[in-house]
Length: 343
Image (cartoon, rainbow, N blue to C red; front, side):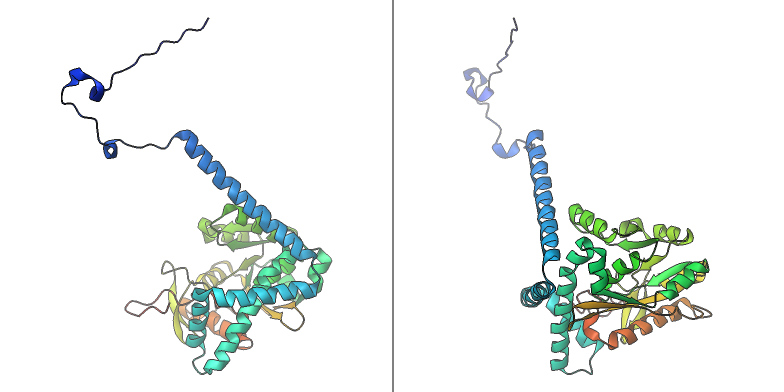
């Protein structure tokens, strides 16, 4: 037989012998979340994230099965919605185009803005093909030229740094290159949802060995891959704040730019090989061009001169088709001391 012993303590407020004792105010009583409640909240949050990621995978798999015409039509609808609803991003794109192309008419910049959202939306939709489509389907959608420049660098046992600025089709470029490279490495900026990160990492690493390094790990991990003979797909042109950046002009506007490209090339004698990608609205195809490596880079240039050279090269590529660049990024977010903010 099991016996229970229960002790009941009297509440001073209800005990006549307590006199004028008063109960503590409700606000004075600390409220501690019950462990079971916290466990349930965490479980619900995890379940919600898993459901969202499962839905995202389902959508991508479904989009991959659509005929090309419907997939392109979906991209067009999404472009309109993004342009109308994402007012903050629209403002950023408009501001960037005005800063970089002051000589263009307002009508021209508005046309570029529309074309930019059209290309951006389609590249987001087309991740369904890049991450879940067959190899043959990807090769029909993404066309690669100039790969021999990368192969020559690998064959010569030189560190290979693929200089891949933020054109909207950069995911298509990374995928088609990973299908040719036995191994490669790149860096990514983590999303707020780890489940989304997992989908992205799996999708980008489908072909051969792709080492994907979180930006939180720092560039040293990327350099370690380069030193081990792994070609690195490096995105050099985002504003990550003042730390480690120098201000050099981009379209004539001082821009906080990481000088890592020149530093890596000088320290490790790396070939810097540009990658430029364009999405063709007429066909829905991507054209990725691997250009010859920068000659004698950085040579005798200072770090600032070499970083400016990189920005100037990027300017030339952007000018050939302005809507293809990633204008939704706040490229001029960090300003020199005393300058007003643009966004």
